[in-house]
Image (cartoon, rainbow over all chains, first blue to last red; front, side):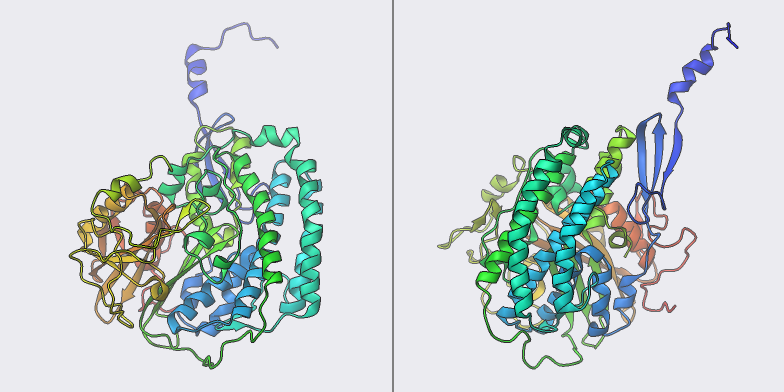
Length: 379
Length: 195
């Protein structure tokens, strides 16, 4: 039926100003894990996107305050399960700093090799999942194929495929074997042409470029005001990387670059991670070439550690940015206070400001380019 | 941020001068020089653990707050300041002007002393510096002004600290539970809380 009467001006006048609430998550397929974003929408445009956190909160910090350091150690690989190596590194590093434990060089080199393998594996998961967000299913299969090789390698020495607990206060659980060293070299050789193929297959794809270039710009100043780190701040042109800014372990001894892209859009963050995988391969190669001999465990590390009173910080560059452990000890076997500074919380906190006025589909691309792991936010 | 880097301003402002060893730069990231001239008029802080006899450089000596240099290799930060509770906003403003970024905010419940400690961690995105600002407030009435007007990133950190410790950040836009359930009326990181 055709309505001959014109729409009353009051209705027409009000219509464009009407907003509605769209709930994204906490179990929405387009979000990773259990992130909930309360979006106030004006049609297809985001007026306000308010992340609601805490759906997978486990009170990790309280757990750190009612068990010994060694008992808490496995927890750290379950905060950001994709950066398990880096996170255990942060925790053992804080304890070693407080207890003044000198870690043998061989152990530090193996820590670097395994941490960088973990970083590549994490970036591969992001790459696959991010492209899945954008509607491309195939790359995920390639990514998981390559990641499988890393998981096999790490399983051989740690016994675990995801939540590694390989580092110990003063060194490592066990030494690496020939199979691992040979496999790691093989992986480096195999991965380089794969990265080239990824470039031809995905990075230069016109659909992907149209979805990412110029979308979701984040300025360096915005990153600074929100404390964003990792590929997010490096995708805004700031070469901030804990491995260079506060060199820990033996990262000083390796020659590698910090990829930065000044554009600040989703493409810049994409390119940072792709380039970082190549840099990690460089680090692994150098570490394998110069792997020193000797023990992998410091001598005379007491079974139960009592840290001298005081507070100690230790920061590492995890796959998503700056992870810091802040320990407060009162000279007991159990930490008085354990604070976990996680990168995803700060990286997500800028989303509300950065997504204002964006199209919903573009806001989701921006969200994906932040590479969030929700248990890392909620802890 | 590189254009707005406050470094040039700092150099003419009583910042420690370099001696001998040039500041190492790795891929553009300025790493704080390890050997700087002793900062004038600031006594070397005895680190709580092993006091180091030689004075350490204090990159924030020109800031009119009690910043003191700390041995990074033992503590994991370069400078720290213990300030009055009403100075935390001022400290945030100074560090903001220096180009610092807010790392995190947290509390420590000192039950025996009847105090709550609030710790502000900062990092510098281009100079590789770490700074800590801490203050203590009475445990009975833990109130402290918000720094979320200076660093919007503080919003969530303060909400989390309110969740866990019950510290009220005055002037904060919304202190509703962040990680705890929406009806939570408990503060699990207080030392007298047991599950």
